[in-house]
Image 1 (cartoon, rainbow, N blue to C red):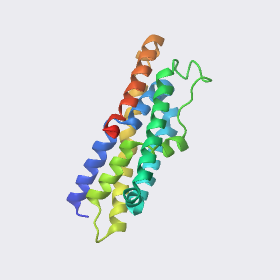
Image 2 (cartoon, helix red, strand yellow):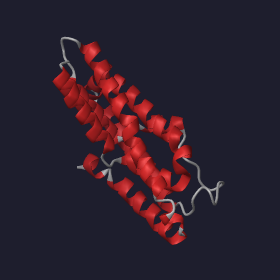
Image 3 (cartoon, rainbow, N blue to C red):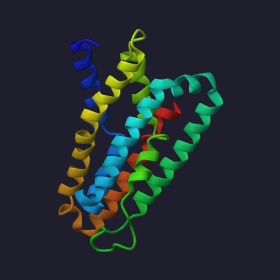
Image 4 (cartoon, rainbow, N blue to C red):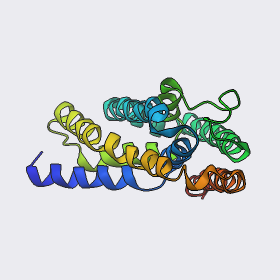
Amino acid sequence: MSAEAFLALLVYAFVTSITPGPNNLMLLTSGVNFGIVRTIPHMLGISIGFFVLLLAVGFGLGAVLTAVPALHTALKIAGAAYLLYLAWKIAMSRSMASRSKTEAKPMRFIDAAAFQWVNPKAWVMAITAMAVYTNPDHPFISVMLIAAAFAIVNLPSVSVWAGFGTALRGFLSDPIRLKWFNIGMGVLLAATLWPMLR
């Protein structure tokens, strides 16, 4: 891969990692409700889970999903159901963790990593990256370079969203504002399904 192609890949990785999607909306909400420190396992789960998904797609899972459309459909349905469940939990959350540690808990590392396998945006990012940037003459090296590009860019990008959420904690310490923020984030998270359903 040329330096220009790798730079283009880094730009693609940055843009897709920093723009709104299910992961970033959940991190924004987690930053508000739990603060940055308690959101770190969620951030790491996203980055490492997506890295593993990229490798799986690059080394053949994407071809399996193309060859077996029913598996792809089942994955989409499972992803949509889980995303709606998460959206509901976020929308119904009514208090910051500092006030009520027993009511809500931040997403665990393993849950965030597993979520990448049913996250529609993650699949689009992974399949597009592998389709556009892999070199058929050097498949192993190009898949590893793509995964490395996302590893460099993804964690700092998703951390920005958790940081935004943490910065909003003071403003959202009012229970009414927090309630409407969480409802709004739940609705926005559910709305991220729209591109998948079209």
